Length: 170
Image (tube, rainbow, N blue to C red; front, side, top):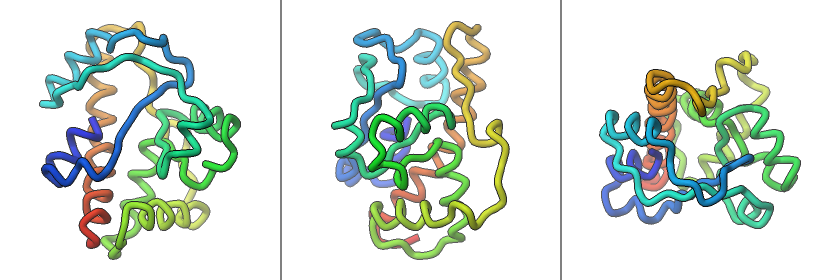
């Protein structure tokens, strides 16, 4: 979803931002769930080839930004690789904190991540429900659709913020 939204913002320049995914409890090598694929397609997102994989410390250490679905996932990630604590966020947390920058110019994606991390503690705390995305696994198709829409709102905001930083402007 993020790759798709970055391509909408940056075109071919989106290739400069490497987006990968992994899970904290993935069913390794399994394809995307059919309801998830349908929900993405309904949003106009073309899903690339997908095979689930587990996140590992090396993958985390090499990442400039780590986005998780929930605070619990964030905790698991930071426990696995403590060096990523300042660059690991829930998806909705990163979108919310990036929006608080109010269009301030950020010259690079790395600078954006640092600025967003600096917003922690300056803004009022929110409930876990506001920063977490519920896992629809095993739920009916409608739950996948709701989850995809919830993610799309945050992911689109993140793509806009990263795109502005990639261009060196808000």
